[in-house]
Image 1 (cartoon, rainbow, N blue to C red):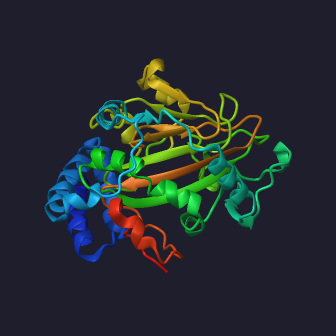
Image 2 (tube, rainbow, N blue to C red):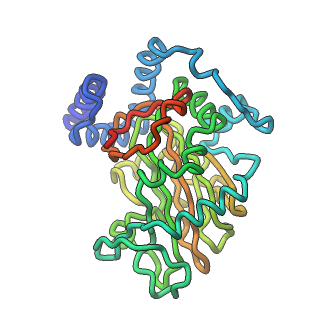
Length: 338
């Protein structure tokens, strides 16, 4: 109990320290994680209130309304209700095929980083034609700066449809929080807790907790069916007090499928499949995972928006576009810039 009380104090102190310094020392982030687990998410709700109170008073409400080019197929009020209730929303249209092909080509012509099962780091191009037993990792990832500076990806990041979804969900103008893209290959071995940790993959159930409140936009860049690594999530498990206390007592850990099924009904475990270009957006404080592909490689792009950059350390990125100011109307960039 005393440790919990101390972690509450450190979390609030850490948040106000962040407001002044724009950094979150590790001790404050660890306290936030501890608070989240013992309060079953309540700490995030309280901090989100502070974020909204502080930022709504400062932000110019009109600056977000410029140059909208909104898709008529999107009902933004309905999307926000669905996200609040279920945690996820499937975008009712696909990313343009030409853009998908450009990103795939980029991925095959750009170095990626991967960690083997002994956590040894390698850098190389991803090879689509290897045999299952030749892949030494479950995750082949790309540098965030390279992704940010590739125009087709940057255009998606700043797309007003997605940033408006985030703004409605947060109640404040969203921050650019993270960009990630990786290949997940089929392997001849099943993932274990040890390989999951070593590869830094996400094939066991878990919830994310890098920020106070966030949304992730997922884009399948290859066809995804039941055999090729579909994303699964536990519907509504993002809600405060909606995670099992016994699981949260373990802390910020990976959870196996059997344990998840002990607490959640089968019909709450949702699986998302779709052709290349399929997009969905979610609050990944829901329990979720990406199943390991069984027969084909899967490429996925993930864009994260948040209401604050308080939380875990984030990467320095090198911005090569001198006209980046033109993108900033609907998104705050707080990243450290090289």
